[in-house]
Image (cartoon, rainbow, N blue to C red; front, side):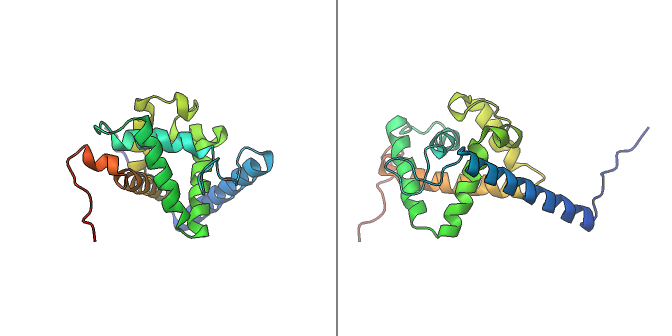
Length: 177
């Protein structure tokens, strides 16, 4: 009977791996920007979110919100606009980090390996998106777990900031001051 032993990684190997991953992500991001795959310009009618971010946000938000009685295309659009408004109030550094994350999730070269979604976000099934979210949530890599946490918190915060989400569950909304 053989016993399974976990491979051990020492600090030096971890630093090499981290440096390699950072260089790879920086190269991919630079390549995407220079090749025109990623635009720094916000989408039409948006302050921060780009056109390439919208399918990513919509697909993930649908799965995070789940079977909420108020979820439909109109309320989803309202929640995405709420997310854009919220992001417009954040620092330029936070906006850049989120744009980098959305860029990695939307660019075909990185989307497949990082998410397991090899088709476009528009063509991704609910099961595909759920598997992606579960994969990141339970990942051994802290970076992916942090990405899941950031996406979950931001998208759910935007959803529950919309009045349509309140009425459908019987919440009268915040008190008027």
